Length: 118
Image (cartoon, rainbow, N blue to C red; front, side, top):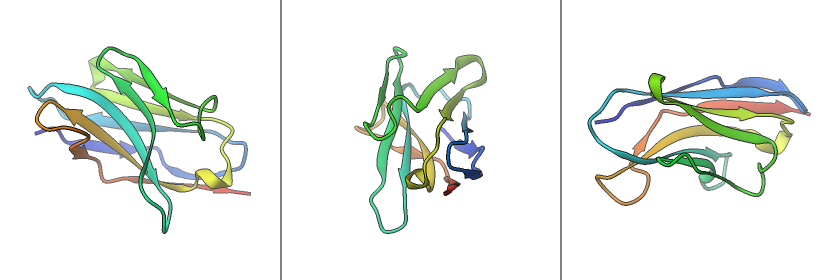
């Protein structure tokens, strides 16, 4: 089974940048896509960025133009570069994998806290 480990969260001032990393253990299970989700206190978990096996990317409107998802296939790692951060970006960020085993994102990391101060 795939295991995901996030890193790179922290505290940053508004307008600053952070880069999150998600390292995936080696696996024989095929992955359709990798995604970054976030969940703020009292709110639902939302998908903010995804990258498909083909390399195509997608973003939520709230982060489009500020966040960039990328991957390093050789390192089995997915990144989320977050620029021009805003206080409303404060949340726990989760990396997830959409494998061929089931429909939807079925493997989750433990999450990493991102806090943006105003």
